[in-house]
Image 1 (cartoon, helix red, strand yellow):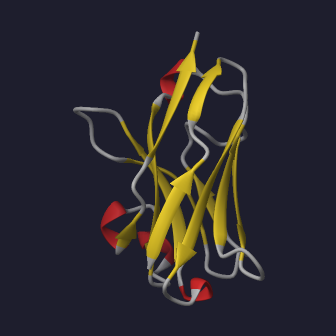
Image 2: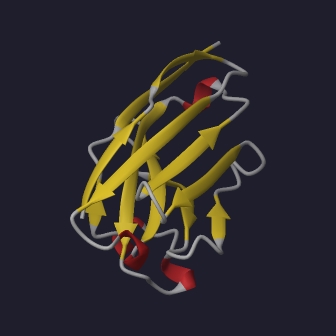
Length: 126
C-alpha cells in the first residue's frame, strides 16, 4: 500500500485543519487505518484509527472530542483526520498508516501497522 498524506500547515490555536491520506496499490477496504504523530526526540504517538469497514473508531484521550477520523472506501480510497480546536501541543508531524485488519486490542500500537505515509507537518501557534 502506498500512502500519501496531505493537509498539514500552520494554524492558530483554536483553528482547524483536515488531513487526508490517499491510499493506492492494494484494496483499501482490506486495511485498518490509523493516524499517529511525532515530535522530534519523542516516541511516535497514537492519535486515532478506524476499522476497515469504518464501523469502529478509537481515539487517544488527548484528542477525543476534538479530532474525527473517517474514511471513504467507495470512491477516494482516502482516510481523513478532521482536527478542531487545535492547541500548540498538537504541533507535530502527522503520519497515516495501514494495518492488515488486526485485532481490536492491537489497533493503537504502531507495531501493528505495515505501511506508513511520508508525514505532514502541523504547526499550531499560540
